[in-house]
Image (cartoon, rainbow, N blue to C red; front, side):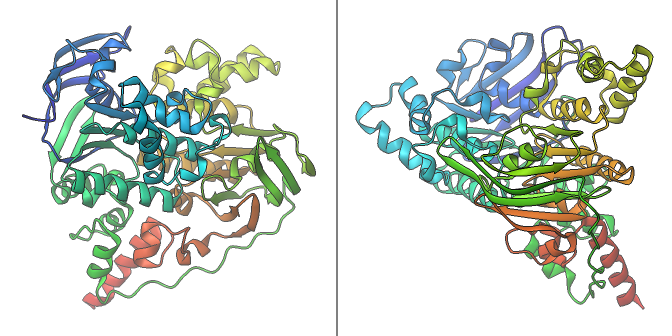
Length: 531
């Protein structure tokens, strides 16, 4: 019997004519690890929600066909009963946290399924250790960073020990090492414990080769279902941005072989000589905003400890650091959205901040009104307001959703909407906190191009991100943080190529920072060997 079966499933959310799932048939066998990829809004999250019966029992709408989990038909069994058989970690960990204290949060799921009381505390602590979050046991959940919250949500599901684990963008808010540790944990419980795993992910670099199968979704349908090498060949012909970054570089260079890991890429490089590294980028203009010797305590946590950083006009700066390093606190200080205990912020007051959780920005009933809201509050005349709103919706690919309620959008679509509500105001400093959360590779490329375009107009852009591959493509300078301190401010982006912690797949495999630079080197090396 399959661990999870979809049989000709068609589903539409309430009030929507376009189905989120359109004739999906899929069998996942016990012990399989299945990676689901596709652009934002293609149905990945809906697929996982349907597997737990949240579609349609919680979300409503119309469901045709059958979804069977561990022998239970989701039409006949509600999510509370199905939760004994399948656990789901949502895209937005904030929506999953219900208790005030971390240890109570992880114990909550065990209590809800009547786990033996005398073993709950030990089980919860073991799950926290497995998720690399035991140091957070006594923390208040309201003080957690986005990445820390994601670890707690994962630990809460792991503790329950269901035979089917469903993960929706589990690494979207984790730093590179934490993401590797989590995916190693997922792989280990799949291989060693026989837990069936279905995982939707945009950052495919660490998992593509580990999956038993890769399922490609497009507009609510399954466009491809096969082994990772077969999926790579399929995506190289269209949808290259869904591949691991090293495979993207080889495909862009026109190479037939497609490595799925750094190790494979190094083997395939052979005698191809790398192109010379570009010279370090020069910076040093007067910052639009500077944060000077900032100290900030948030609850029991010293979030900033004498941090100083600046954001230059016309420059895209990536702010990098492990979970809890103080990146979001620095950004909030630069936007003057929090008051420092000590230190000061100097420069422009026209700063726009987009938080990790796009739902924090959504106040109106339609997408169009959401984008127009700030302009309306600022007194912008109606004709100009309408023109700027339309232009911003077009820029972010949201025009088709203008009349939709913002909370009906996918996570990636809500993220783009949140950015649009701020960029429409034309700030001098734009701070984007984990802007690629829930975003597919194609949208990431578009966001990087937008950041570059805004910088070319003189805007200072700061990308607070754990997505090193995105930072490598989009940034010109890098600010690194740890333990509330700034380790390096506005360092050249080229330094990412030699990083230990802050190094993406392409840099590790080729020594080049971006996919485009690596592809150019591969093309040049191939031509040289032919001559």
